[in-house]
Image (cartoon, rainbow over all chains, first blue to last red; front, side, top):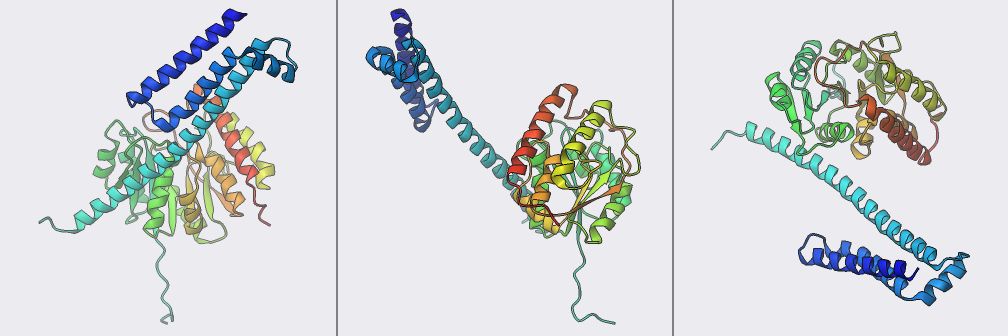
Length: 119
Length: 243
């Protein structure tokens, strides 16, 4: 069982380092890295702080403290993914509106330049 | 007799959304020009990879060229937005694949001009002109008819028809809010939500002239789920049925 907690701790450390490295290389914007860093940090704390896992397992009515950790980790990642879905939906709407406006402006610009004799 | 206030002539625009329709769009534009001479034609090119844009221009249409692919709803809405900004009173949408017969445009326009509704649907089933509809699509139409009946409070025979005319009131609504991926069915619910009315007029449908439908057999399931979800979301926003 201890090995599983160690694996989760290593995984969360790798996640944190990976995200920080992506931020440094400008592959991911700082505002989107925060959710992942938080999720990684929560996972790391839970993997190392067994008393907290035992307390959570008791609170959730689960006998296995690793299952409690897995549940919390799953929920944390679901929240991160949902936030990203919201963000993607907003960006898609903006992108559609922008594309439509660009097309309309180009259309009107072409109409204007056809009306005006070239200089 | 000179009227005290001279009424402005109502302006009609024919809107043709097109995506990779180089084989058909020129013919469609030509047919529209013959059916309603002098009426402006706007082809909205949804970032085609072929020469749709050039073929449409060559045939005498104006082209609204989208900078990237938006899908049918985004493409049609771009046309509606431009038409609304340019002050058109009626817009009739004809698909760029040649399935709609432009000789039916005057029938749709006449129904719009009567002023009893905000939207007119060219229906292949009012006079049983649906012989070119494939089995899968026909089954979908039967399903959506049954689903829409209680939502709309009245029957609709051809809910998936893209041969649609709108007046300026609906144009204003659709410029602001329009379903983006598979728009026909959801647009009916959006219309109902605003207590707008629609009528169906008989129209001829033909097999597509070239290219492929965007709704393949594999995509049909996704289409059904997407449309059902879209309708459900719109029903949640329901603002009351028109009396």
